Image 1 (cartoon, one colour):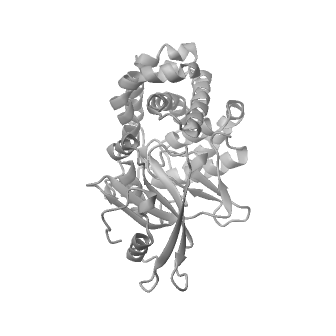
Image 2 (cartoon, helix red, strand yellow):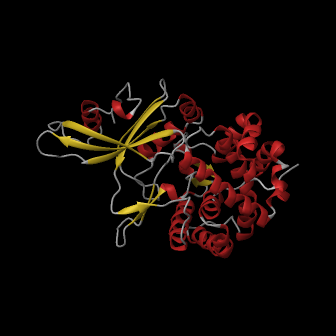
Image 3 (tube, helix red, strand yellow):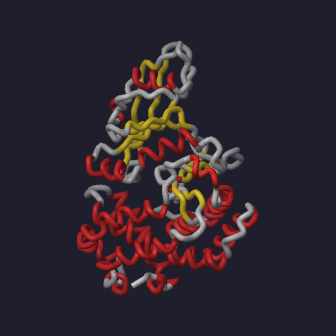
Length: 367
């Protein structure tokens, strides 16, 4: 794909002229075809924290030889949110994923018509297929057991394919996923935990609230221990909001979206995040062991030999604290007015705290 800079910094910059040039450079639009009109609809309000997502409806001059609709992803127009996305490499990582891996990574991903990152400006534009004939999951509402089984089947086979993969050496942009979790905790936790407790202290039971001031440091030590385990390619944000479930009979029953966070980590990162963050606590208690065994079976069937189910359970139990510490950072920095984002974080925190209590995860945190 040929570079086109400067890139638009907002959906209003996705003009017919710019889109025509972008789609021509990627080969998605013949040189004889032009876009004459674009209708833009901002979608996903309150879902993303550091980006803007819009649906574009195109009108063409003459016969339509390009996609009739597209999904556009751009960095947030909020300077603070964009700074976070640039600092942690989220925009660049997603562009690299669609350029290098999306076609044969082992998980169905949306087709990308255009994906570019301008490091000088910290700006990115990704143009994706507009998925139809199905629906996205809803993390706030929670996943059903069939949805969870489908997700775990997909991520288990994916992790087995990438287990200790030599391909990592060919893609230096695939960083440590554990380090991606550690960075915001290390950089921001001490500064924001008082605000998080002031605004959302009622989310934390007394036994956990008392540990919040020192929770960041102890969690980072636990993450250091987890980083010593075998690595695979993890999605990094594997949850219902990022999963598109195809309609019955679809040749793509599941499409995995939002690839800003892929990295090398122990596979339980994705499995634990989905199971604990997506199921209501009663459903999770009823099904988590079966889902974990289902996940582990996919690893074994994919040739993984160095990861026992016992170690998987230990890693699963120890993962919850990192999510809660990360949530403290989000709660301490969440902009006012993001009602859906607030509900999402609150719901997820409640589910993970319940899991921490059920598995006595605090006992695993280094002092």
